Length: 84
Image 1 (cartoon, rainbow, N blue to C red):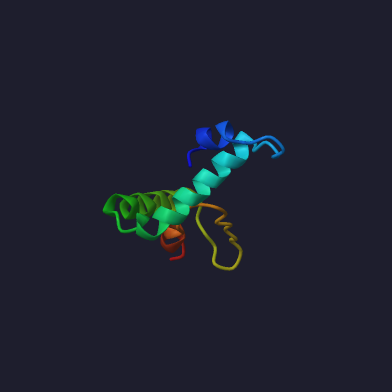
Image 2 (cartoon, helix red, strand yellow):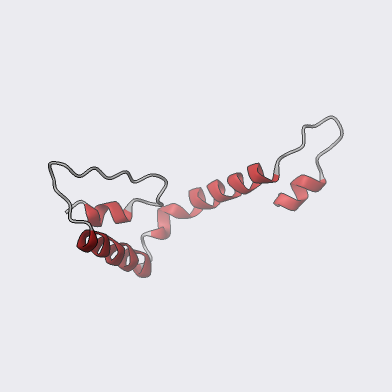
């Protein structure tokens, strides 16, 4: 059911569904349905590599001191390129 259908069909006695909650659910569902195949796309791997190389060129990492938080950043492919 689409977001608009969910909003339109909210019946009497039901708590209204916040549009933000529907967007959050739609984003989560899209990620869950597509994440497993995202890194199979050569352009995605190329982009993760290029961004990882750029970050390392601007912010040198020290294995003893550098801490990196990869929070809600997709499939984690960029982490692979930053971990070397």
